Image (cartoon, rainbow, N blue to C red; front, side, top):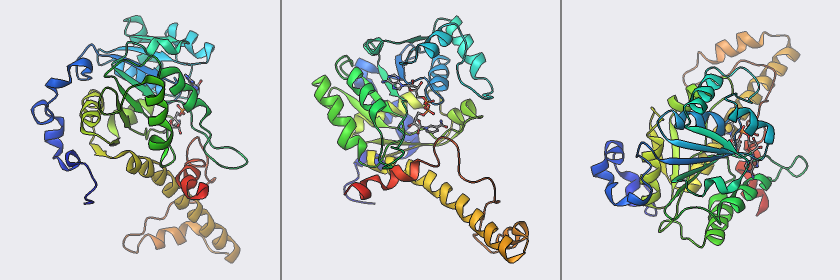
Length: 314
Ligand SMILES: NC(=O)c1ccc[n+]([C@@H]2O[C@H](COP(=O)([O-])OP(=O)(O)OC[C@H]3O[C@@H](n4cnc5c(N)ncnc54)[C@H](O)[C@@H]3O)[C@@H](O)[C@H]2O)c1
């Protein structure tokens, strides 16, 4: 283990989750494990809306914030504005809105009283340069920083290029709020891993990587995510979490491309690509994918560009 890793990183998980091991008692100003915690979710898309509804279902008081008036209107009417088949999302949104635990707002100031703020806005790449495009992220942080409550936990779930927490998120929050991360403001990067079509299932069942650069932020975030994540939560630092998220999607991109390249070669040579794949996978430790339509969807085509962004920019 690197000597620079914080000491809490190596704590056994059972201790990280137990109140006694974490010393949650002194964190009274914004204890995310409390049932009636106030939560703001900024960005109500495929990541933010299921999260907001799932957190509301734990008894929290949740406000979702979005710049899209149609989304805000639909959610306040108890409907899900998400397109595609998303089992359980519309029902959960309707239920939580009708119980008064979930509402949506166009106002950034609606996050002012939140104990926990989760940022889930889009982080695309520029179509020409492939550089990260942080317009939405910077706007969300600019709206949040002046009003964020002292002692609040801010979690960035949006996918980030390595170095963004340190170089963009922390400075924007500290400058705008006049607070110090780790002292009177707590900041983590907990990248989302869900896949469309299985949003609620993945939200609860997939292991999470939780990047924190100080022990208090890590403890608060473990308590918050422990409310609804049933799988392992792996604490680490900000940059490792950024690299893990973008690397896991770059890995998938490479595997999909490799299977398709082999299929093209097989076709050229007049052999059966599926048979080739089956036989490759009889070799130990080989798990070649089936060839298919190619890389697509929201994240896989762009996240490899986020992974290499620091190298490209330097
Ligand atoms: N969609 C997925 O399957 C998926 C999976 C894992 C991670 N992610 C990552 O999660 C992040 C969000 O993805 P998504 O699919 O939910 O995006 P999305 O486009 O569906 O939703 C983003 C929402 O943020 C809103 N928004 C933009 N700027 C805002 C601002 N300043 N204030 C408030 N709201 C604002 C938009 O109107 C939109 O509703 C991205 O970084 C993405 O890479 C997405």
